[in-house]
Length: 171
Image: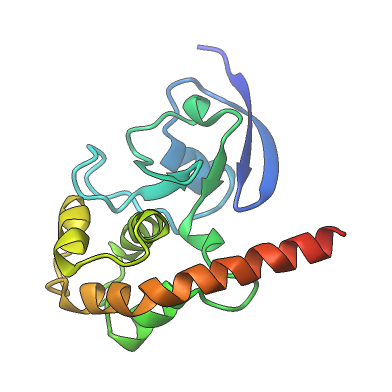
């Protein structure tokens, strides 16, 4: 099979690359762009470790082909922070020890970013339901839920500040 040219913006940076049509998005991010924060666990879409955001929607990077992301805006765990400043969800994960081995953390964070964007006042039940597709062997989810509940009201203000700063820098 011959390579296909794609254009994709990843964490705010535009890229144009030739990829094999069968290359999964997670492999493209890890091997072609060097963004190793997206983890591969089961490679069947079950564990959620490879979750990332494509046009603001959480997707499984091991199931989506890189060519399907042509023209899309992709956000990986590396793109969640603002410069050297962690976002409120990342800070809350640190505060509540919502990670242990850290393998599931990138997928948990990106999945929660979409949920908190759409539901800035989630219930514990909603969080547990949304995270049911992201497996964690270490934490028991308690710290993750506490972190998401604390971060939820702070995240909107942080995103608004980030957007305002980006507009100011563009002007």
